[in-house]
Image (cartoon, rainbow, N blue to C red):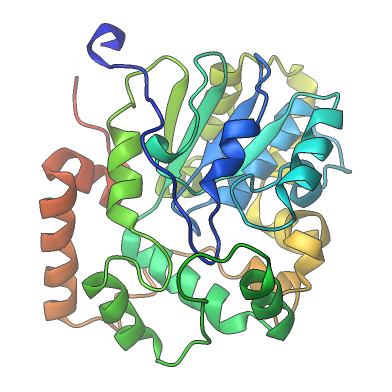
Length: 303
């Protein structure tokens, strides 16, 4: 399958209140780098925790928020971020929310893409946006080089927020569909691994071992119980100061708000049948049947 897939190439830049994709143009890869990619609110921090625990052998002191920066975020300045990453002596693991064609793709690095049903993403995204405090808006909108509109405070309840998000292709953030579609297209490359949030919920130990195999990390058998415990949602919530950016200082309620419920299906009792049908029809149109089914269920098509 590898021979049928061309190596991804950067074809565009993306700018927004959050993005500055040009940072990737100056990033110097190492052969063992790990890039964790998602649309956002899809299990990004969870996968950072998993990879951090694998790299550091189940240590209690893995502050993923500091060790694993969001490279294409507009803050802090590019120079600060790149210098900090260059200084890291351990195996680096970096976060991105870009589609694959807006970043620089290294054939030596390992890429883990985590996806989640878009309706679950939206419910988590709504909480993230609604809980953001004044400092968050000042930092996001006030950083130099803003392209496009600033992000504004939540002005709707969750259901109309969902409808606007669906109708306006990810507003006020970015397109879910192009993000998922771009990574689905390169799933056959040997240095790309697709992971689904629902499968992390269903079988966390099995998914951690799958990631460890992909990253070629051998963990002594006696460390697995501790390492797996450190990757549970309960452990991460209890140690949110190490997982949330700045310990959760940008959100009302702190890290408790950043690492919120972690549950799926909260939309089921709130969305109408018409809302669900509209979402599923859009997913099918944008992604095709196999990818749409995977995004909804975590089930890969049969070979």
